[in-house]
Length: 184
Image 1 (cartoon, rainbow, N blue to C red):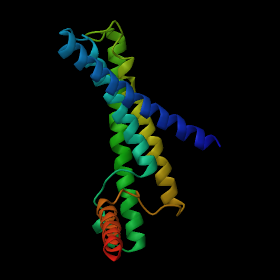
Image 2 (image 1 turned 30 degrees about the vertical axis):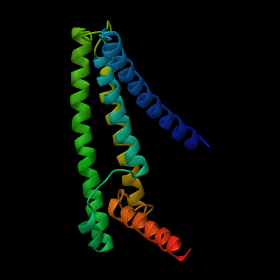
Image 3 (image 1 turned 180 degrees about the horizontal axis):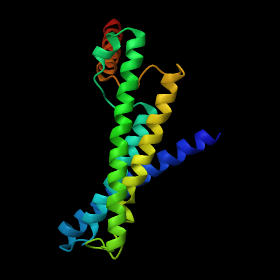
Image 4 (image 1 turned 135 degrees about the vertical axis):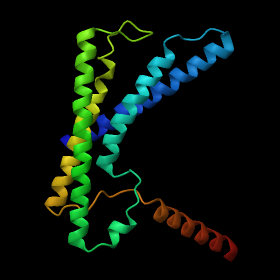
């Protein structure tokens, strides 16, 4: 129950970010080309919304396994070696995220100490840029969760999206539809 609620909140937040970004860009284009007057803060806010969308989306992508990866070689390895390579990859992902989390924390603390505002809005820069810390914390949580699933044998890898397999499935469906039309 709580898991479904968290999923809905994450998906809703990502949808809200995407819709807000799209509407803001649309309004900016209409204002600029329709009325010859732009929205001076639209570009900066769009950039911030896209940063939030990317970092939350990366975390959500790890959670649902929608990232694309090339794992043909890893899938050919024996099961125990495959698990070992997966755990090494997860450890490297965690190391990478921890480095960026540390750097983000230093960056945000300096921005807060200096008190720099955004270029077009009277908001201190560290507030919207806090997505750096939030996003990397979420990524660390997702990778730790996946690491635990691999250790406890509940998962055997990243479960990356397989575009080739999906394409073959679509091709088979199209072929079946064509054959069905020809038999009519």
